[in-house]
Length: 404
Image 1 (tube, rainbow, N blue to C red):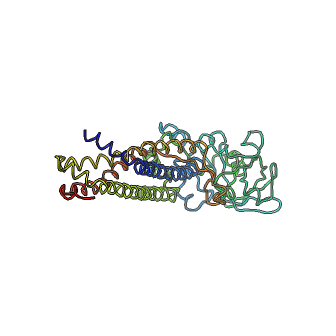
Image 2: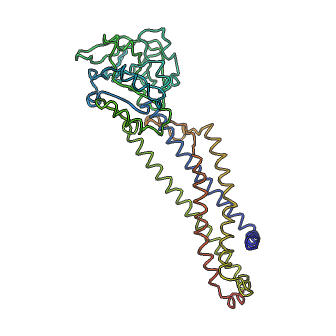
Image 3: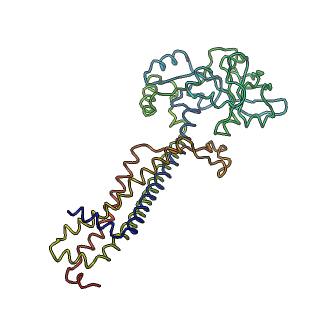
């Protein structure tokens, strides 16, 4: 009976009730969409850092990490590779050569990081082949082929099939160099990396060095990203003489930014809930004040304080939860649509690629966030209903009945 009365009371002032329902719907939608937008932004950064740059875990010679000198290689790389491949949590793993040197064209030169890769396996680890916009991704036919970033192409004034010279220090300290031909031009969301990194076939890299067993880096991706810490710890224990690092250690700034944005989002949702709470309190206080005589009469004929308190609470919570499903449903549809098609920021945030960020954002929300928001809305409505309910039970029937 109390629930029925409370529900009828809500719709006695239809316009006011619709306004608060609209406010709840809009507030939930706006809060969730902003969270999904920032979630997509974080995902893009994580995807760039993990899948296309660092992978989940990397292994190096400890001295190489400190000096970046080519003589500090991984000892018995094939043995280490085989041991990692046998780990059931590892999806794919690859060996790489790494050198820091110069990339020169007939007109100019630029300092670059030269990475030798196994083209077939690298597809499985980073999927780097998807970034090749012109030419081919190591077709296996061209000897001494090289992939060059679009930014570096512009700087060196070269084009497809141009010859460039890669120069770097060999293992004995002497300078070695080799002539390579541009077989592909790639472009990622990180313009700085595109300017400073070239990719060659590991066989061609080692041919320049005159040593086919030189490898400086082992990179791997896991089947389950949530097991990074566990697998990282296990590999560290398995190879104590090597430098084993997860993407969190390789890119701590990404972790920090992720945590910072997550913290900001919770604060933002708190602000939304606070605003929603004040709106509910204001609406219900108005309702209580308008119904002073009515409430006084109900209390005079036997409606006790606990029932009066419960009726106002039910009205408030019901009013809020009429708007909650609409807000969550609208958010789900919006996030699903833009999560598939993306939101381009190119017109508003030019130059994002210079900071390693993509101008295309795909909103994303974990499914449990919708439940968390529903719980937050319920708690907000519950707290917001307390004060109007207290005001209602403090009315004195005799005085309330005679109020005009």
